Image (cartoon, rainbow, N blue to C red):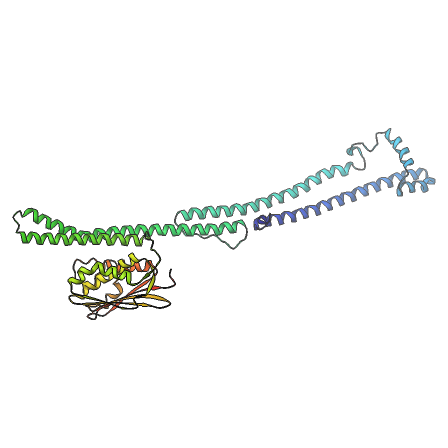
Length: 415
């Protein structure tokens, strides 16, 4: 009951019906009072006529007659009069229409009562129609809004009113927002799928063409010299490794961008993922004659996923190794404060051109000083996705010819 009274529609119709009932009761009271006044006048006129006729012939009976008219008769007198009038069909059980005093009043009373009922029923019906029209208009508005949402339009229903329609409007808006978010996500996923397929197709086209060309040359030249054949096979191996790296990297990026990866949140020393990354690249580091120096707080910890963080660091270190050259130095510094944990990777290689810095973490972007033609440009983009997916941040700095610096920061508040 309390919930129903909160509905403005119900309160509105209840208030109007009560007001209409009050008006009807007042009209009924006035009508009855008016009819009783008419009846009183008719009775007075009848008694006056009766007294006049009787006294005109018997004036000496005035004192007795006046008492009968102005005072209540005794029971004995009533019984004498009743017995006489019963013989002429004039009794308490006679039809109203047979009562001379009430005949005209009764005929008018039926018509007037019917008109009064009609005058009350018509406004009541109009009131009910108007109130239900308001309710169904709101229902039609909600129906139209639902169709608009299905068509992809942005629709908001008013929520300021109290009652069930206010609650319905609020819930409808929540549903519409969720549907819009879902549709936007589907559109983004569709665009992402389209882009990732386009990227894979574009990036695989070059190594596949190279492999087909090398394979065709080896098939046509049956007497190919062993040294040349080994060189061709080495190029084929290089292209296959590039394709393997590209496909693996793109699949990881696709999973990260689609939100299919759930990172673990564990307390891990910063040193652990760094050592994993170094071990993966140890052969290449040794081949280049480079040195790796670990400095800072080796006991620093962070909340994150060790394996994926090692993946990000592997891509960053790989980029540094490729752009540092023979005999270069890689410096990895650890830092920890009450607010954050940080890893900084520096090299003394060729550095980063200022015009490349804003694009360094973009997918498939290769800097103007890229040393390897086969570089696909997804390593740093993948590292950024991994770090930011764990609530961290990554940035790059450097100058051309002065080395590069990459900084990864994990806030202590992000758990």
